[in-house]
Image (cartoon, rainbow, N blue to C red; front, side, top):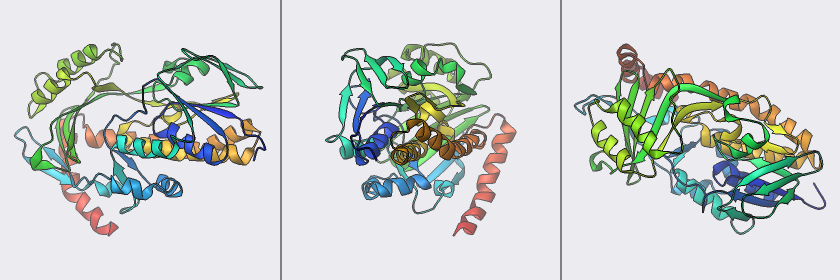
Length: 380
């Protein structure tokens, strides 16, 4: 443990960054969190806290608070173009530990984490890092608005399109692995007849869905694309054009979903990608969460990796005291197998949610009808 704690900067105020801030402050460090938005990042669909990540939130004494806000998804239902259910399953079958894993709206989890650290951590909102002078003595960080400052360590927890990763490690294309799919999410009116149910409709290589939860609902569009599509990922008009082109002639409730995308200015749309890096650290800068090992929504592991990865790094920093290089090595050695395992599950997620052919869709539905009930019996 250091006698005189030094400043650590965390870039990104979402799940990974806020969890990191909690543990570093607990271990006595002076923590600053910078976030380009005007508040912690709260958008997005419900996420899961699974397996060992549950143990981390228990240690943080927020498990009960999370449980009180949990989402209870009763069924995932696959429907035809007439909206008739052709197969369904209880999603708890995918839990690591039934009865312990938690599904929660992302914004609720972020709120809970923020409440834990807001009075003990320095937050800088509506600013961003433009340069990092990263060397053996310190990391001098230059900001767009505030004056430059030296930090003991800089932690990039700023997501798939990480600014810290770009500034210190290089272009995103070097580390981003495109998985041949695109996904969009937008808010939609809840289906009162299907509360707490996720309804999915498939045609070959495409999926549309409406996820009803806690008196809210998200509409989802996902499609396979062998080639990457050229568009400005910050331009919502271009994103809408891509979705309209891919889904304009689809049935079920797709026309309504497209209408919601076309009306929205806060939609999410991006390529389904994973981040793979040989080294998560360079001198005094280290990455966590999606910035280092994004697994994609198809794995259902992103939030758990964010929580568990932040905790693993914090423990390594505490144990290694002044030797940050040793801490970063410990962190990657301990956590890389966990991240790799999570990333490897993407293929199964893609096959299950977005079958490429009619035959693979029929096989999926048959498995849900026959195999899932058997697994439920065996797990009881």
